[in-house]
Length: 582
Image (cartoon, rainbow, N blue to C red):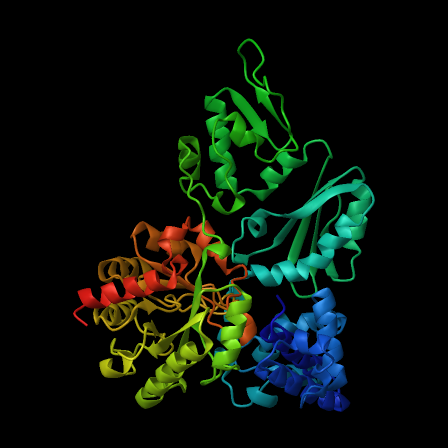
């Protein structure tokens, strides 16, 4: 679903790139794009719906130009203007990521010093030529060189959703090539990892040269790394995409192979050898013995054939990481993985306070449209510009009055996302929190505390008995900031001990907890809740690919609190509070 935030991000990125390589006369265009991004994100209604109703261009700060771009994004998933801007600025994007160097200074570096890469910036710093350039004036050379090194050493992985969007035109080009009978994403993207280093495509074709040519000549390609049965390219955004060509006679088996993981495939093939079978991406063969080994025949178009031959249940791609799935498949005890339709309530929703853009009525209608039974409105506490004790009590009264007026579903529950302070205390007193049906504790500041202090702070909040769940516990921002230095395993044990749930925050910028940490939480028998962290009505109940992490962590509906009906959900919250003496 194309949200207002998605649109705003695309427009803001375009504004940055225009500023980066534009001339003086482009300033008006940059300002218009930035204003359009701000106004789109502030809309209470989905921009796409307003566009379809021909009302978007009439909104202040938007106009026909922004509306046209929204239409292109809605129709194609991308902006040709943005793709071209990325291509033109590709050599400078890394320069903008150096601490203290934004688009304006990067453009000055380009125009005055001819800098178009990190390497050229390093040379300019070492030769003293950056001393009077924009924001670099007065910066110590050793400080700048360290900042350049940090960019070089940064994790090259990108959010899977972003990689999927950027690689989609390349996949479509392969699919449209003559001789191709099947093509799709495989590798870590198909296993639904939330961060990927590159994108793999498998193509079953009778004409490998045609695929190689169509793929490597695509307008998004900056560098061709290889061309042939395995072709590789790097796009103007820096994403590496590879295509693996296979024949048309064993598509299912080839898809299984190129999906991986390597560890899963090795373990599966060793298991096959013990049963007298040899298997790889090209076929399956019996090793010795008399008589037919495949009385039912071999359907190599069936991706599940290796599992069938070994007498085990089919293993979905999300679980193929060699974390015990083969033993469970042999025993027929694989989990019934969580699905979006299992979630009855969205327990992390913002409406009108702080940076939210909506109203109680708007978020309720959005939840109804998603078929939800309940939502919890969890505005921020004062530390994040949210509600103080008095405003929180008034909000709870407002919510209960609205429920009486509306009746039916969804039921709105009164909640709060209260800040966990550096010492583990909460940003609101116990008396204020008592007006809420559900309390989320969250760490938004002091994220640089040492590991022991960070962990102790979170555990103290759980043991206070005042919070029902911890929001985005690891503090990561997907593809931007790694998890904070906190002992998640200890958090999981504390969560199980106190019956405080840990959140899977499915906001596209977080996906926190990640699948490895969720796996730890499940092993510790801690409760999990799933919330969208919606800041606009269109995002309420929009679980997106955030659910993938839960599935990769083997989570079942029974592990997740908000798969319960509203009364059962509230009963569990109340039971925890009784046990805490509240």
